[in-house]
Length: 116
Image (cartoon, rainbow, N blue to C red; front, side, top):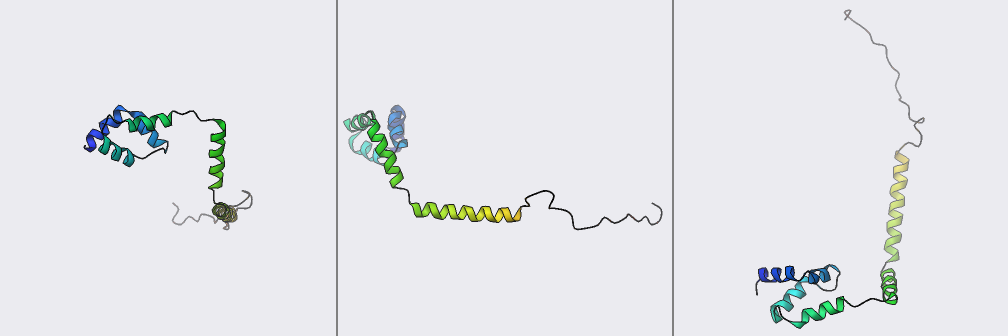
């Protein structure tokens, strides 16, 4: 089985590519399955059947809670502290009012030599 024939197989069955984009499988696993079992295998149908199962609200709530469990709060805190420091530095550099900024030089009169 060649890569080109696998690409054609995926083009015929875009739901397999969609399963990869939904993080249910990888192209590597699909290719290995395709290489071992061929195009007419029921393995791909089982993958698609599990994809088409209807999710209940409890499972989506579990996914959300798992997402929040995987967040590292120390990393978030360090990122927020870094942003606060950056904003503090920028606010020190940029003048707060336009009235505060005035040029520190006096205009000199234009002297005309040679009657130009």
